[in-house]
Image (cartoon, rainbow, N blue to C red; front, top):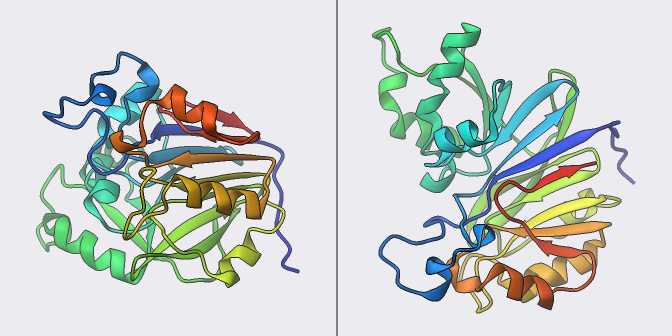
Length: 262
């Protein structure tokens, strides 16, 4: 059995819990998008992890700037990228403020394929001209092997988003997996003993490249963490409070601003 390093304290903040369009969806007149319940209002999915006196972000989507301001985040040591779809990388330009404050490039951990997309999307940051104010990235390649971020052990969790490889991450007792409709057996083995697990589901009906609600619940019940959370939710999932009442004990919908202290 694989051994994992366990930590005294991990704080996880959900900066966003929505799918690629967020909730409310622009111009959508549905009841969920009109809801006044703050838990029905979801920015694009991203979390902030505070561990070992450092701050690590998973994904920097289009809402990154506002999410960091809303959370009062004053420090960022590294960014983990699950995959290079725009709702997970489009905010990377806004690392510029951290570049300026700390006078160094931002460490960004991504697969080789995701790095290609980042270089294409932010080509101006990789040119020869050192134009003042450009974002500065220090790209570090993720493979299936565990790696350290300033002493913090990170376990990459390879899953499939239809045919696209996506990486989730495990740090100590916490695991985060988004944008998947298949978790292979080798990755399930890496989740052994996890106490807090987050997995995505976009809606109740089946989807070609994402788990639906039933599938997400089933995978959480199979892994059997102490607490499971479901994120990356679309307006088609329904009202937060109504879906929450449907879920088994120990499984919850994530929401923007949710904080977990492990």
